[in-house]
Length: 153
View 1 (cartoon, rainbow, N blue to C red):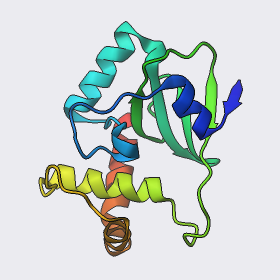
View 2: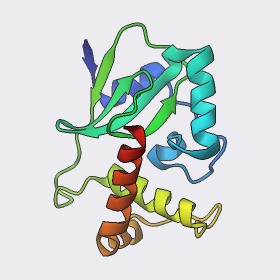
View 3: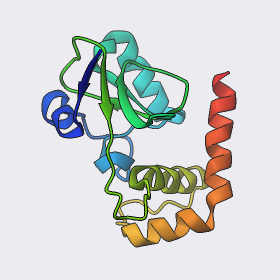
View 4: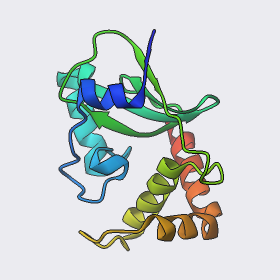
């Protein structure tokens, strides 16, 4: 199994922007695991499975892995360039942020607000606002993640 850096992933495989959600996490490239975004990821997986990557949060931290997976998934990337061999991207975070996993914060914030219908389209959210929400609503986004994992089983 090949291991590459996050920078190499973006340069080599070129994740497409999520055309269904202007406020998608991961710089606008992540597709959700439910709704129209999941249907789109499923469609691409059927016609071009080597363009699909899964964002996971597991024992080794956050990773991007080739293919469509269910366990520990946070979302999906659809890339312009197909992968040729199984690959893992280990995500390293800036630990000067009190070991805060900023991508997980972004994912939880957008996921909660999108599901609740309170996400303002086209508005830009400041990182500090997301972090504040993340810590104030810790149980809400964790429950959402647990429900996702139970539905996979």
